[in-house]
Image (cartoon, rainbow, N blue to C red; front, side):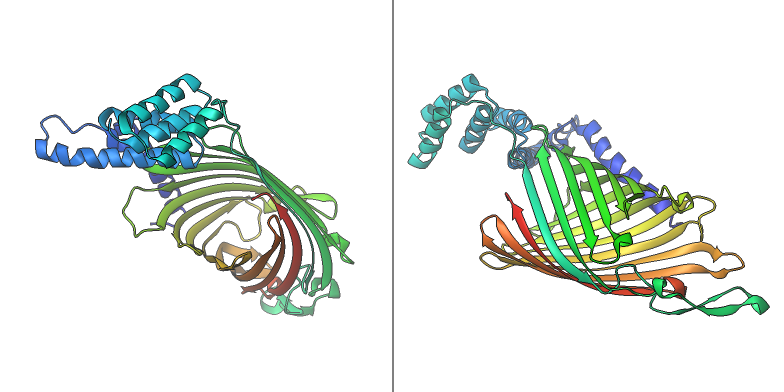
Length: 433
């Protein structure tokens, strides 16, 4: 199969499989479909507990994500067939209370008391619910983070690691030495960044805003600003857990517009059995990057990924493997590109208030044709390895110090683009997490 066909095939699978499951099974729960006519009675009996268990798990997931309307609808379906499930009645009562449906919540609290004779701990929860008056809860609080810091980078301009380069072909080939401005230049910098995430609905929609600015002590032509805004929506289609994201980003360099980005991503977790605390998801990401001052470098990238996540009480690990295709304009040097990307990330709590995280990634690109006829008569091959490690220490509950080191090694078959860099940054962070 041609590489450029693979992302579109996965895109079709990701869209088609959940939608097909939803069409066959109803909008909220594929497992809720009735057995086919004439199905074996014993098989239907075995099927029913599985269906109900899945329905209840969906409802608890909706509660955890603060999608109270979805949770209430799922729980009401569940208790039709499980009228003795005390936990489902309590979750339903609390969901209605959180939605401001006072009359329904009070009736359910009374039903729980009469039918189940709850223990003191549950009675305390019920009394707390009544005491609130069941006024509609505000959406899940917004989360924010603000950071200021200082750092140093030994190659701010991504200067080439080889001062000599060769151009031309045949008898016209010549080797030249680059000017100093194209060689690595070190500088210190100050930075400030902020992020804000706010629930927009009770059905799993988030609004996202991120901004950052970086100022160098001497190389001001490398000063940058960035802004990203986006929407994210989580939902269930059949038995698939799906998350859709759309974002727009802007970047300036030396005070001038450098880059505009448009991005859309669909991530879906299939209903397969995995070891406890492990998740597998597939994702398709489509992005368009425009360079206002160098329009021939504009790109359209399709990325198809598999993401494996493993969680334990103290650690979080994630592994990503992606196939890439980048379609550019006809005049872009090197033409279209194909490649792949791999990333391993690790996050852990070392002790109370002290956390560590690290990641190692590698990206490979292969150009489809010679980079520049008569000047650089070779198709570009790019290998970029990035290693990063960080420590975060909470000196107060919402105030932390963040120390991060990063190394990049960009190896290419065109020496002009080879570079290595190392950076160290210390930041002070405030958050409400």
